[in-house]
Image (cartoon, rainbow, N blue to C red):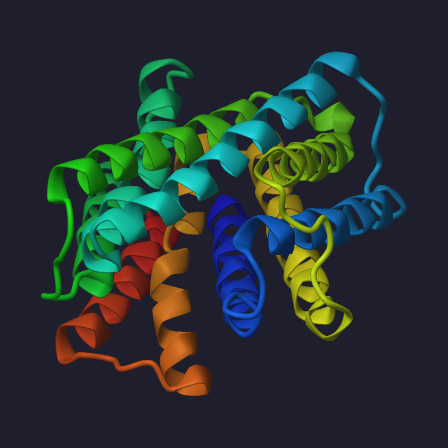
Length: 276
């Protein structure tokens, strides 16, 4: 079931990216993320109605810290892409997002994946690089790579923090995760002097993206609270392959032949993990 929950999270993140891309050029990313996080808070509270959840302050604190870590990761991700290009940033962030939790699960939590599962992980991570790579590279390469390394590490840290929440806490970490995001992005908007809310015509897409993204967070929490952090994280980490495929199908983004091969490789890697 760990692979199922991780894969479901990957699909939901991919759909969320597709929805969010439609509004990302109509308002500042910080302003948009206020609404994404707010939509996530509502979804988190809704999840409390269907998943047995107990208030545990330690787990809620972990959720909040994860929210701040992932919020910082997103900001670093955007700045990295602006410093160089998506072809440099995306592969680094995608791999580290999976690799840090996988390493933590194996080395710290003493999780012992089967050899076949490890082969699936290796295939999936390699496929991520292939899927997200493109030949265009501009700007300050050293700065872009450094920021991408920080972003991928911050994403991985957020996953590790969520992976350490207890099953008894249920969805409360998701609520504090998104609540921390709202507060953080509101503070950033105030400091930078940006509007706190996007124009009315732009508000629906970020809210829907927040609903979908928190659905992914819920799936991730269910998976890691009852299963393997390493396997769930790697399965969820395949989301860039989902995003690339959906953006090609529904938003007209180009899909190069090697990216199609990478998507197939990512799917195969998850399937190998599932049968291991």
